[in-house]
Length: 321
Ligand SMILES: [Zn+2]
Image (cartoon, rainbow, N blue to C red; front, side, top):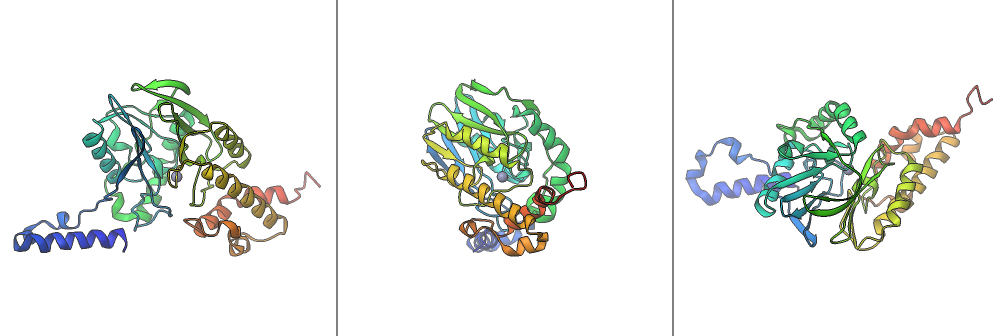
């Protein structure tokens, strides 16, 4: 059953249970949307709202990225806020009801599934690396147009609110919680990874994926691999990838590295063979990764997004000849 049909079913049940009086409910109330997410405390004071292992679509309402909330004496530190105003509002409601409000918000990078819920957190600092704030401001309207066309009514009321405040990288206390904020890159030009000192939990943003195909629209493979080396040196007690489950092994690190290397090699080989992008797409993802969430569509997108890089490297240009 899809979330959408679930919602309709719940709405119908509500009408049924409440009897004839509910027939007077305004239509908007009957049709109200909700993500109805569950938060799990994966380490002491570390709450995870897990995204669907899928592409953005109307069944998941855009709730595909992980959101993490860290408990502090001054309210929650919220890490990433989802794709829509509604998702932001539901995360905010959880923070208000269970964690005493919001002390600060961090956006790990500028892709819209990680910050389009920011409007619900604008009464406290919304922090990111500097280039993330610039890219979010630059791309916000384009992302908004794209998400409205994909998600339709789930986007109702969503306006992009880019992060405004630059974070100071390094070890520090944020709202009384000891964190190490690591400025890395490769998935995008600026990727913030966060290590929670109390629990040893690594919140990796989209530098790490597990069981869901990595997205490559802004990827720089060599830089990304160097960032994986930095994360690999940390030995965290547990890891929360940008997409995928909390786990206590190096599974996301190993899988993300293997995926990047195999996909890089496949696209390079396709370009060297003189394939067209359509032929490279038809060849499909590397078989070892064909079963990941969001496949094969994520591989198809990556061919389109990255083709020019590989073609340029494979083809002799006049100045090289
Ligand atoms: Zn993401």
